[in-house]
Length: 72
Image (cartoon, rainbow, N blue to C red; front, side, top):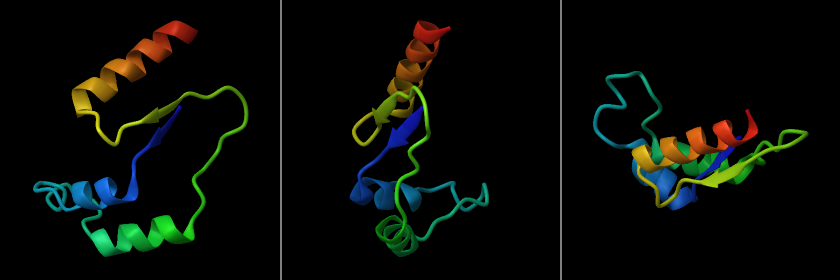
């Protein structure tokens, strides 16, 4: 499974409150630079791409669980 998020949204999310307390990356410019200089990982074999740009965490989780159940 591969989760995809547009760069602008990813940069907006990375600075959300609480990430620093969980020792997560909080540098929006760093995220933009990383995305611009690295290719998205594309695993071999069957995969499911889920664009989470406009999805809530709850909706994303539901779709992930639905996909897992469909292939199990």
